[in-house]
Length: 326
Image 1: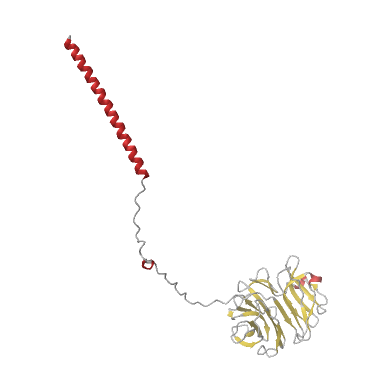
Image 2: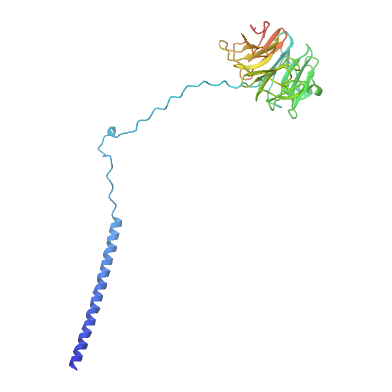
């Protein structure tokens, strides 16, 4: 019985020892865990090591390399294209050396038709009111039939469609004549690639016509915005080849051909002239004015043996085909 008691006591001692070892192991595990947590917190709070700058602060600024800027390439010189001509803001028509008509023109309906007449060679001009009796605006062309009679293609202030007006009393009164419009030459103001002729609308030889010079129902010439001139001998059914005229600004009939006003002739500070035969020949004329006009500020007209030019503030005439002007 004593042996049994001893065996039982020994078994109890072994259980106590195992329990102590388990408790010691558990305490050791907790201590290790606490140490790991503390180490992690210390590592987070410690700032990382900063890399050493590549350039020392003691290095003088002059020794720090810098990029040398590359100078821009010099552009190759190119010629400046000539500016497009614009539709004349002045309209001029002449009967002879004494009688002529002129008018400033502009947008419809903001520009009332108020043509002026001279009967003393341009010394004085008398204003007339075509807008009042006809409602006309924006004069496109003027034609002179006699000392008392003149006609014009304008735009009606109501709707800005083309209309034909005429005076038989030197501008003291004007009236509309709708039946005359169809037989007239003029450039369509709203679509300057279309020219109206006595046989109807025709396509112009360029996208923008700025002026038209009319000899008769079949023969005319147009001046394009790109300074080309084209002539027709069949009412616009066909147009001749383009004839470039540098600086061309306005055109009219003259003799058996046409006269062209040009504004950049070398040796002429103002407006000069060029004669065009309707084919391909160009002959230089004289220097007419000494002041260059603004864009659209020149017009020329054929008064039989006298040519007229209205350029900027000057109205001058030539009796030798444009060779000299006064």
